[in-house]
Length: 123
Image (tube, rainbow, N blue to C red; front, side, top):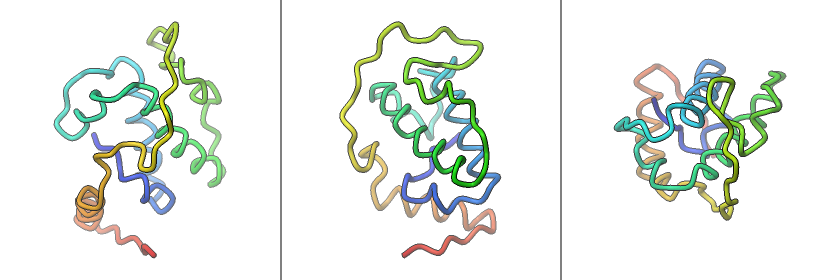
């Protein structure tokens, strides 16, 4: 399980983009707070930050012609098998959304993709 660096979302191949959506959906649902080495940093932030990150992925999916469930655009929604939040205070949108998504993390993500034979053309 991994959140790709947000600068890479627009260039991810189909499989990684759709996988990212599935992973975020799991984290927003019953996976929230379940320890996993590569995403533990997410739990140090409000779940609203994960919602913001998910919106980037959802918009990219729509740009590519996919039709994600519009319920995911509700920050309180946590999936079909998890009760919605009753309240969730909005968090300020920051760039990057997660401060952990720095240049070092971007390099780690790019190396991970390259090890899978995926080479992105970055500006």
